[in-house]
Length: 203
Image (cartoon, rainbow, N blue to C red; front, side, top):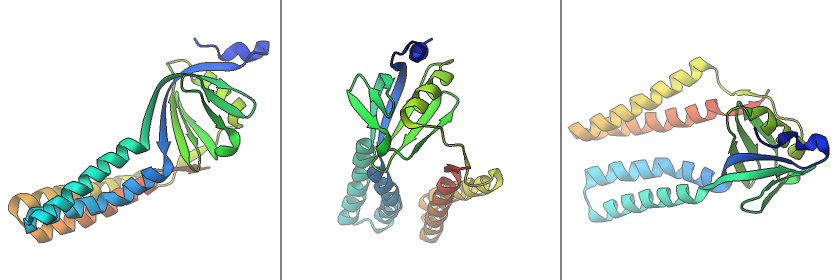
């Protein structure tokens, strides 16, 4: 067990957590470029021109670069809660309450949301209550959330995504451009819908 109970003795609340930081703007940009990268890749397969292949490779490389830049694993940190801030001791990072818009908790995994950066924190088994206490002291009460879409709606969106991916593969294998294009549309719409319906919103 970690040192979450230290606050009872007037000491700062401290806990060990594995932390990942996300650059919100880069995450949004990466998601918006995924359809373009898919289209460029399909186009390179059918057109066969070197410049199209170069565009497709550039698009894929850009996606990989943005993904790596958007997600930063900060490793296991000692996190210390103040009255209006959370300190990641190892990297000397201070997350102030005014730079966040709320936080959520699911078992031993918490997410802290902000307009510029968001954080995922995972603690050891049995430390979920201490994590809730630390984040409550730093940022205030947890936000109760629910999935935006119903299980059935998410299942239908997932089916559309899988169908689109299968159609893309079949279109490439049998060299049917129309089928591949239909697959792209289905995959993009299904993926975007699934992502939107899977988001948690305030209850």
